[in-house]
Image (cartoon, rainbow, N blue to C red):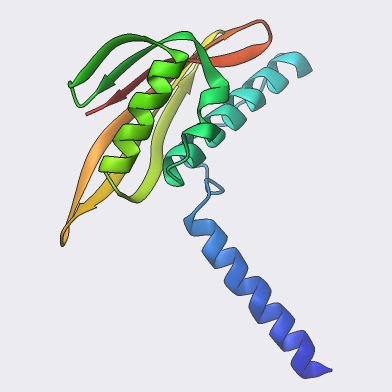
Length: 157
């Protein structure tokens, strides 16, 4: 019985350590604050969840986790090669192509800022070429309307 409990506890500990590496649970990039009312708190919680979903899309190389937040047009600047306003389907193709070419080593957010109807986050996209690890800076900005947060712009440089 003791062995089963010890095994269960050690499995839970390993799971927590592994999930910490691939999630945004530390949330040091997101500063919590007091809100005037419950509606404002819910709006900013939705903003945080949106950024987490987008971050998971980058982390897992899955543009399908990002595209639900595309607006009808998104401004992209991907390493200054793809720069301009794109439709959601074009943006999906460009980001998918980027993630296929730059094989992800890690992704994390570093800081964020939010306002009433606008928010942005900065992050680091680390990729590997041969034995070298290289970093790209990522900025994602969101705009709020119709009770949702939409991607306004993604810049990767």
